[in-house]
Image (cartoon, rainbow, N blue to C red; front, side, top):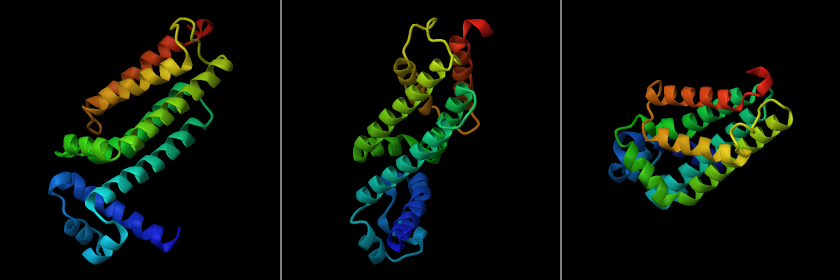
Length: 197
């Protein structure tokens, strides 16, 4: 990683807990510079504004998280277990950092204002990755889609929609975790091949 990339990554990593603590509106560039251990002048050399910094942080978080989601789905093993692990990686990378903050609602709204395109692209990639994993599992006979009447893309979109709904109640180790486990159990039962029922 180049020095410039390392510096930007350090700033973005330092900014995340500041945004989580104070929210977007109350966070200042001075707060972020202090957290990163750099001068405001250095911060402004890297990012022209708080909005640009927040968007860059969103892009980085989405890029890293989606790489992890893809890696998890490309592993071997039971497809439902891999989907559950991918959802967990998605939540840990994109929801948990703000989900436990008092400012979560504001931060998620700010993300949609400043980085909606990034968020939508990640969601589309998530659906494509889930659809691919489900399609491959169907081809191997690991799951049966006849009973559900759905296609892999339909099920992937349903999983993503459930994740969106659960996101609004996210608390690490809280009811949202149990909701995701329930979703995975239902999915496993619905997709189990007739021969294994």
